Length: 472
Image (cartoon, rainbow, N blue to C red; front, side, top):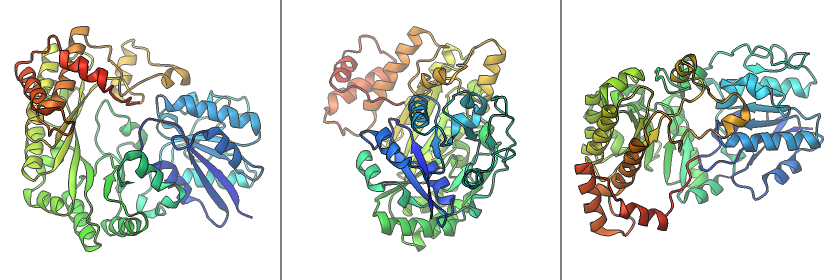
């Protein structure tokens, strides 16, 4: 008889499909196991739903955990399950456990942690648990020793994802994500990892600057099959770096057209990649449905770009954005302000560059975030060596907001200026989709052009009427 493997996605405030759980669930042998995926975001009472699945025949419970608020839910669920079934192994995987396996194992409700790429490790762990065998020596799995202390985890090399099974989206309630998103947008990953070294990003730690991409023909075949099954109207490529090589992008777009995958799609793009891409290829991407790219510009200060090891230049950022504007491709340009040792002039340069880029197209958006030292990054390690204290417990990291945090390396005056810029740039250059009319656009543009943000009456009124949604 096949045995159940229960998977849980903790509650968060965004609606991306649980791709990590779909991936590890798809890797299990279906002749031996029945994956049961429960998403806390979709359930009125997720714990009750989980407990219905945790029967005597379940092999284990696997939970994917992001840094921040999801830790609260993951801990509560782990403890509740352990209270009901002390014998049931509870496994954590995902970004936070991959960076802090020992810290996660300090939680009594967690029995083992999967570190890094999870498919092969999780399959081996489940097979051992089903056979009643210990987890000692499993590559990519951290456990406790006989004294109850977290044991050293032997890393598992990153495997070429072309050798891994296709993702079975039937494990998830795809329609529910369409409903929550308000659009039939299908999430898909065509590559894993990143070869770059950005000092504020944890990807180099988790994937050791390795990268593997699916074959273009496989991507197109899978998307065509998913489109027939789920009738989606847009694809969101959730890759870290989709535009890694022009040849691969060319092959993907050609294969998508050949397989009649002609819906709009969005993807990530580094500025240096966009600056190098030929206009002809970008035009073919647009013809194949490319609707919008997300660009990590990060800073308008050349000095800051060097300090954070972004390995791009300001001219590349503008060249990339101008190409997108010429071809009618929208862009979300992300910036970070408030890095340690960043001067007020550096911040002003970032706001100025963001405004100039935002003005290039009504289909551009700008997002500004205050720097927070994310665990496992070069900048965080530098700060710790300099005496800065990061959260030392799961509870501390659970309260850590790396999206909406205010930043400790900026002054209150700088924070107000940034927040007001973030508000006014939304209305200064874009299309009026909110029915607020031309007056607000003119006022917003006037304020940004003159950097005059005093007495922001319009901001206070609109934010009272339409509070900003939570981000994390």
